[in-house]
Length: 417
Image 1 (cartoon, rainbow, N blue to C red):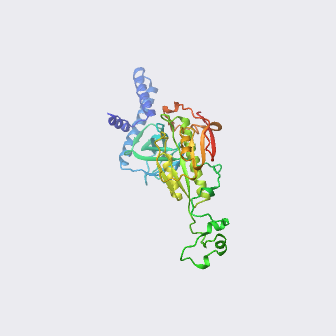
Image 2 (cartoon, rainbow, N blue to C red):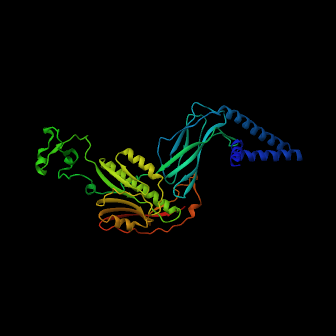
């Protein structure tokens, strides 16, 4: 029954406006015969002929373009709360009749939380098939298996014809980076994982390494070797230096059933904060590696490509129930660790005890009035939330501070309208 209704809907050629015009023409035609009103007869016949012409011409073009296949360009990443983003659709060297346009509509459910779905609909048009730009504006990061529908419409909005079958448009919306400033400043020297610390100048740290049998004698830095009682070899500036490892935890936990708008806001802000931290460190210290533990898995990031892939994985990460997180038996219990969390994390104190031998740098979001954020950044109605927008979960206004570490809080206030 559902498939039958869908077939009827897709095969019906008139839009809502066209249907109203058809009803009006029938009414005027009846009035003309009942009252012998010539004007009503003229308007009814004219409206009926316009609809008939557009419908017949549309069916002819639908048969002509029956094998048309849209090609969707999905090579560019999409980011939340960033205006002007589009998906390009190509149809080849095709051109429709006068008064008609090719339309491509991307629509469906977009998931931003465990049970937090948005209903998305974006549409673009073009008189030919060379390029159709469909706007893709999303208020939050997440993942959606959307549908792409190719239609033929007239410029008056009276008729529309579906061409071919719907295309699957898998959409991952990543968390945006903070553009205004570097979000975290720290001295990572104490958080390195290295075999030795060379007491040399900054230049020597980056362009020296321990002597390896086979190195040329003229490459040995005798001055530094005498000072530290170990042979040190000069290496080229383009050679890779010793790699260092940073341990990071991204804790997205909540005891509540479902996700409230405020919880979604905190999670999205934390994702941006976390990714900004990684990008800033990688930009300033490209030799550093990251061992990241999220509730879902453990990741090792070594290159920029690894970071880009992790950004897509993080985009669709939702809250987990505490106790369901991934384990990392190989994680060290000494040194430094960087922790990102929200005030919904009720077991943060247990995490502190588990990692009491480490120096913890904690970055968390809490409820406050320092930064006010609108739930929907603009009045674009292409992405609308469901009934979950009415959920309310009280979030604490403070996070406990770790012993021997430091705590940085970002206070967020949600503004629905």
